[in-house]
Length: 70
Image 1 (cartoon, rainbow, N blue to C red):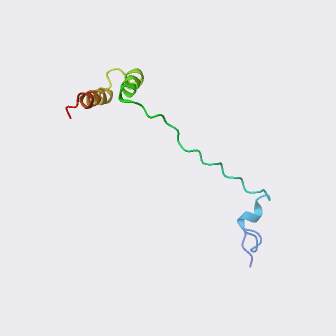
Image 2: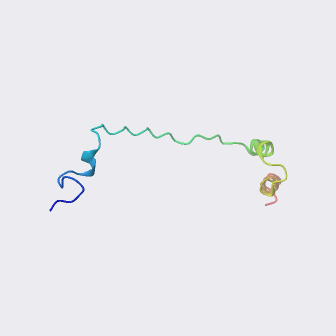
Image 3: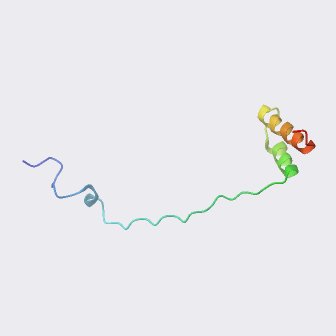
């Protein structure tokens, strides 16, 4: 008795067209810029949402670190 799946000697990969495997993309490491503290404050002020409590906390923490109180 034969199964309804077709020939028992055929694998799933045999039913796919004979195409060469795709080449993997080369790895691109993430790129970022290291900012000085004053640049980081300027970026945060420019891009942070006004009134955002997390932005306020970061700015306060950076000000404390700048004053050396921490």
